[in-house]
Image 1 (tube, rainbow, N blue to C red):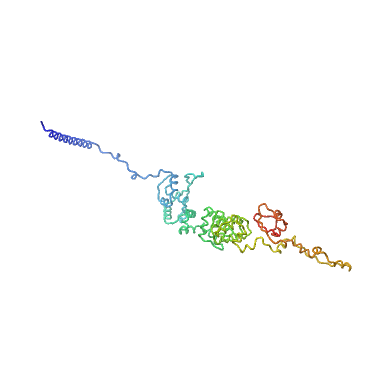
Image 2 (cartoon, rainbow, N blue to C red; image 1 turned 90 degrees about the vertical axis):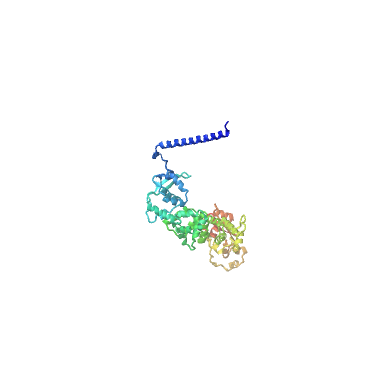
Length: 461
């Protein structure tokens, strides 16, 4: 019997030879199959990749979609798009819509950029959506610009530090306080026509305003107020003090603290005596921070014959400037004693000179003394005439009559009264128990018409 190990060895060798023969047969089969296959035609090559494909003539997005996309781009990115000539829709390229977005959103100064070249003659409006209030959102596009004009636009946008209009510079300031300290930005705004128009108005005053003060005031209102003022000045170059005062009052009514300080600096007399109580109270409300002008203004109002509202607000500001607690109801006399001690002795109810009262009231002036004519009487009647008269009879003699007729002389004081709504001269006279003619003559009134807030001096005993 054969050895089993020899049989296993022979079987392994047979399997190896069989496997090798199978591999050789498979290789021969594949080789013959490939040799008999015809060559692959050229049109069956793989398609080119996206990067190898031809650029399309126009992108698939519409003008409205591109405009909405451009509106969210910063200024620098849009300037880079001025070199992109790829078409979008209706013959407009990316640079056309980028330029339109620069002008509309970022206030790019197209007129200054094309200085020396023809201005755009064609303008088209593209509606790209609606605002929240339902109005259509439009954008002005400038078709037909030449290659030379676009080259100039790109050069201007690349070299100019602030290639913006006056409105663009103004709105840039409004973005943050730190921008007001940027020298290049402030210098660019100081040479705009709008700022120069305001500066020209204030250089005519006795106390010229500083440029930074004017800038602070202008930024405390909107662009429409400044633009409206410039348009008015174009039609009428009014540089009078009244125009300056009206301009400052417009900004004060809008809540400008800088305008209130400029009014005190340039026209303090106007602010103290020529404004109504409403504007005076508004100015005091704006002057929250202490300054020499504000403190002087409040003290002058405290000693003026203004209404209680003005006195109350002036006293409140003076207490705040002094760092003291403001009384719940500030008293005028107490405020005078605290802040104006030299004025507290001379009260508002101080007596006026009697000569003024007598001369101002013709109906109660004493009549001229009559000439004394000595009658011709017989001697016996002279004895009776020489008889002494009682004291009362002597007081009624013509010689004492001019002295008794000077009725204003018993009045020793004047009370200050502020006319309220609905007051008449008759009501006031009845309230204080004096004659209407006395009040009229005492205040030198030409008529009985009164206005609310008008001060009246009421003579009292």
